[in-house]
Image (cartoon, rainbow, N blue to C red; front, side, top):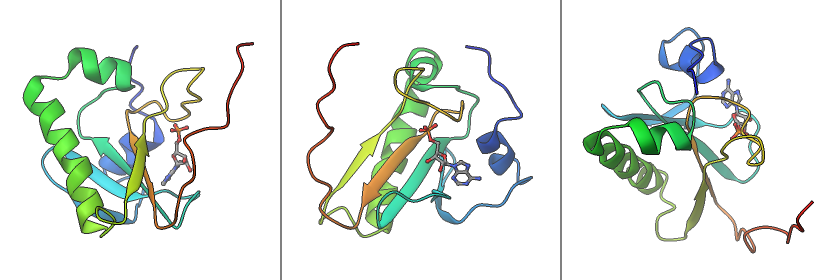
Length: 123
Ligand code: AMP
């Protein structure tokens, strides 16, 4: 998928828009979601131009993929939720309800999160 450089996370990465940063390294930036759905709700984004998990998993070099997922774990540790536990997910594409087309992982934590999803029937 073509990467749109005007997406909101690209504008956060460039410094054009503010964010509440919780962790940053050479591979990733982590910041609080503007509309939190849990007591802790943080987004982790790679610094490269990948529109989705599909693009990232196909096109990113192995060291970039490894560095990104290490940053997700490091973010959870910095948030002090690694022991109490957390959930991470990446909405992908139309059925995944992805709204911002820069690959990102949500980290949810800070309370028991319940089961994964309400059961969804095929449409
Ligand atoms: P999705 O693409 O569906 O995985 O979700 C995009 C997420 O980005 C939503 O949870 C939004 O609340 C969040 N979001 C959108 N704009 C901002 C922003 N400027 N700062 C922080 N989070 C944002």
